[in-house]
Amino acid sequence: MTTSPPVIAAANPVAPAPAPRQRPPVFVSEQAALQKAQQLADAWAGDAVLRDRERRLPWAEIEAYSDSGLWAITVPRAYGGLQASAWTVAQLIATVAAADGSLGHIPQNHFYALEVLRVGGSEAQQRFFYERVQAGERFGNALSEIGHRDYRRRSRLERGASGWVLNGRKFYCTGAIFAHWIPVQTMQVIDAAQDPVSVMVFVPRSAPGVTVIDDWDGMGQRVTGSGSVLLENVAIDEAWIVPFQSSFDSPSTIGPFAQIIHAAIDLGIGEGALRATLPFVRNQSRAWVDAG
Image (cartoon, rainbow, N blue to C red; front, side, top):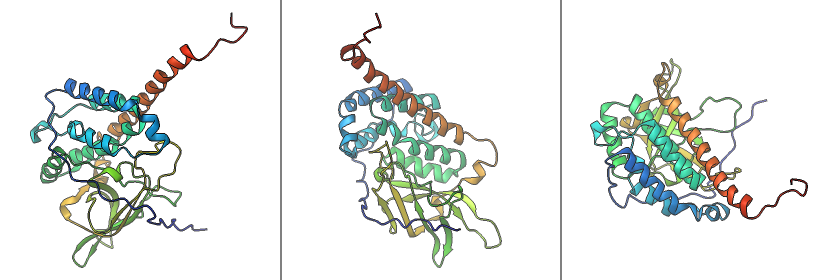
């Protein structure tokens, strides 16, 4: 029996993120970036539980996070960036995740999209999008889809009368609520006689036909902005289309880079849990009567 994909009602559409307030600074060293991450994490830790409990989307924290320049640390030196190592990115993520798991998770797909761009983007695409990130703009994601038992993407990028047009429904779009650009993994139909190919389309959040919905109701990650994205006849500039399938046809850093960030999120959350547990054990628990 074939099951149709669920219809996602735009019950809680979210307005696009405001434009960056300022151009973030460029860090002089990776150590300076990690010091800034620790400073921000210390400031955010105190209210992390309250934000999660009351489901307060961390808009102010995200603005401070990207204003700091930390979201641009992987931009290559050739384009004016720090070109931070994967180790430094992992340390950054773990540091923030120890203070607030949601804030540790939100930039994961931003850094992932930058790695996709570095591996598969043209020089012109890299120059354009690196500049947008250095200007303080954020990437979200619209990769996953729901309603089928396989991992094939049903969203489609097809030629319309006036150019490329994107349609699809996306789920579990962490960071999309806070993003200025939403990288969308979709299937590009180049020719009816050929199989569609996987591409990453960097879609402006404010483009007509893009709706971001705050409908995330999963267990955990309550304030990561992991809702749904609807794409309805979105006009796409060819310059926004980055090859994606070709980056997996041969070994690349994209998969391992994503995995080390995931590991860093888990590490940070684990460290944060340990820090919260130790004072409880020392100050509030008591030994079992037969423990001696």
